[in-house]
Image (cartoon, rainbow, N blue to C red; front, side):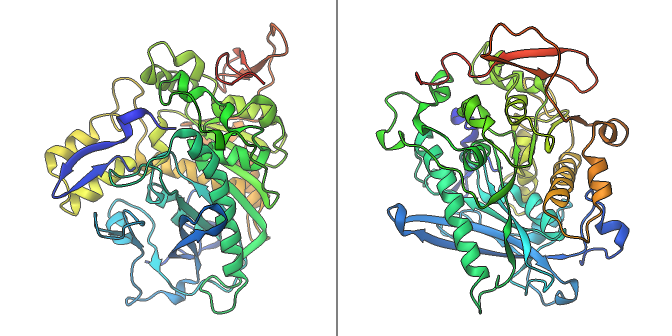
Length: 469
């Protein structure tokens, strides 16, 4: 979800503008069976810049992390290269490398080694938040790949990541996001099926997961439940992020992609989907995000008094999906950007000499990295990233993983009891059903807190958030 200029230019320095961005693995069976630890694979990395000829030659970039046998890695293997702006290369801003991020505890990745022959592996397609770069989710790509998953994170064209980038309106972004993901799936499956390609026989076409953060979460919902009419979402107008009229080319439906077998969202923008559209999702799902309190703070941050409308935005899709293999994970102390690399990027850029110590201090003590004020983040980046990847891996292992996975442990992790005794930063929900009087069928119930008997109600489709059906 884009929040006006808050996510945009932070400072001009050394000729370019900085924006809000956001060793071999251990081998023991015990370690790689534990979703909270690095897996048994080393991690390879590659990237692709392609063109979707069926979408007016729209450029498409996606960065891919994949499993590698550790014996393939030696001192001569180059570290993964992460182009900071993949559409202009190093013309406007330099690249970073895996070694730059490893200093902060990120898992190592290597550029272009041969993928493990244990494949094909399940594929996770990830769509970032609006204006965010693919490298805002390095921690997800590296950790999941070490556990035997191919992870492709997109860099969406015309998303306003940089001052020199094109910047589409929100409805055009919503129109393009799911189509970008489907195109990238087709490209990766083609590469996996082509002898001589690096990823030949690396991707399992029957095991594909859609995932995303913020508006990338919307793309995930749309890809799995369909969106009857992209332009019917008026939420951006309500919160002052856009004005009518909406682009007429967006007044079309988005169809689900039947190749997708499960889904994961991180603080996903469910407010852009009607409840009846979310109900259609019929695959295993993991809905992860902020607590209701921090969601309210986010709403107040966007518009004074708007918090109440945001309170249920993580519970709402979980209530709509209403399946026994659907899970909701609220992470205490997080805000919207906790699910990215944003707050670590400042330290990486300081270490590279891109920003001053004064600017780093300002970065780390202002929203969204501040631990005080409105919508604070009070969980460390290390702990939050571990929680996110642990639950993602447990979910993927249980529903897509092969026979080498410890599915008994995965199933245990995906319970309220495990969260209570082993992950106090997490509130886990299997169901949103609870006793409360509903004014009519346009409302639903949801649980505010894991250990509370409180039962809240909310409108399925908040008043004014959608055009007339």
